[in-house]
Image (cartoon, rainbow, N blue to C red; front, side, top):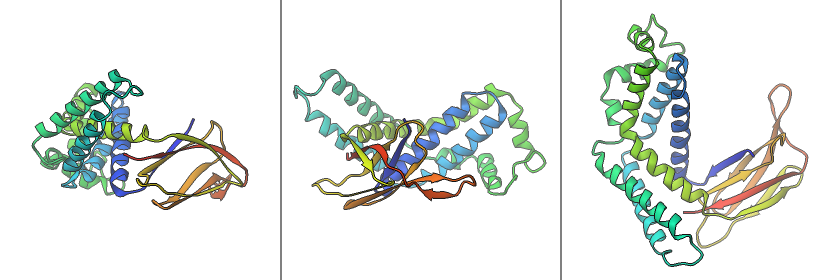
Length: 252
């Protein structure tokens, strides 16, 4: 079932972007072809751009600490599986320890690598990393899959604690809301939002083979969901049929 996340603020938007980029890096590392490792490296360089924010580590540590307090307050609640709760608390402690142990600024190891930064600069030029432009990069790509994978994992390693923290936070966020089955009549659904704690993200799930996708305009007060389809020339058009979907409003 296709699923679409829509963040309501820049903090959650940043976490989702990093999660997406990490997934693409790890997927491309699973194969041996140099083109996949090239894609993994370029994606890694995109991650380095995002994590240059100086306050990202502190934000993650603060959020993990807040979630730990929330989880500890649930101890003894008969409606909560104690084993699952203890597992989440252990994951939070591990993530916090790993983040604190990595003393360098997030992404600094990558930025200190002059060769990687030269590759990054060339990637801004269409076709800028061809073998005649950057022969050292062509040489590296021909060192074999084991060496390329070893290098990329080494460059990723200082960022793994951040990834672990983001995975935990987004897992808690996605599990925080109740799913509601809804109907978008003629491809449109609107709803006013209320509550003491405004939503930070919504998740939309639609049945397989549904010939459209959602576009969301939302803030903490209201949301407007329009379902769109692509015509034969890949031009977006409003979907005129009724669409069944599942909505989850998420809040940490």
